[in-house]
Length: 100
Image (cartoon, rainbow, N blue to C red; front, side):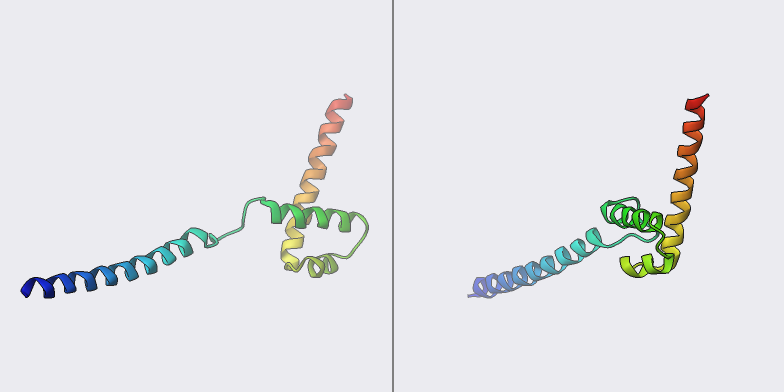
């Protein structure tokens, strides 16, 4: 009769451990999928917003309007403009070097 109690206790402990495993797996998924701090690299979302920025900026739209349109901060749009200016300058230098 003592074995039944031990066996039942073991089954209860297994149930507890399985529930704990489920919680730990959920926590692991959270940490795997969480956004890392700092600015993100040029992923698909960044590229999409940047391309929209370029088309709007070149058509003469105000920076504030571009920020509202893409639901990003004005600071982000200013970063995009700095990146745009840098790329445009690099292209200009490249073309000048090719012409010589």
